[in-house]
Image (cartoon, rainbow, N blue to C red; front, side, top):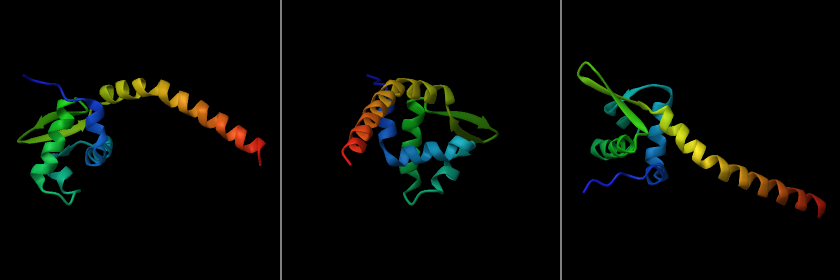
Length: 104
């Protein structure tokens, strides 16, 4: 049975979020990504694999190297899903702020 990984479980991990930030500005090989972490390369490779399965990263073959880059479309889908929640919480925080200012 091939279960698809959940994108939100993937981005819940701080190492995977750091990987996404690294490749946001430029494509990188797995080795270049791993060089930024103090963990074993197979561990970083597993994180890359999870992000790729979730379609947050895309692979591109360039000669013998595989480069990973951010899948902007998938990140946009995640952001669009989260937007209503952000708006809801912003409204609640604004309301709380106005209440606190009244009671100073």
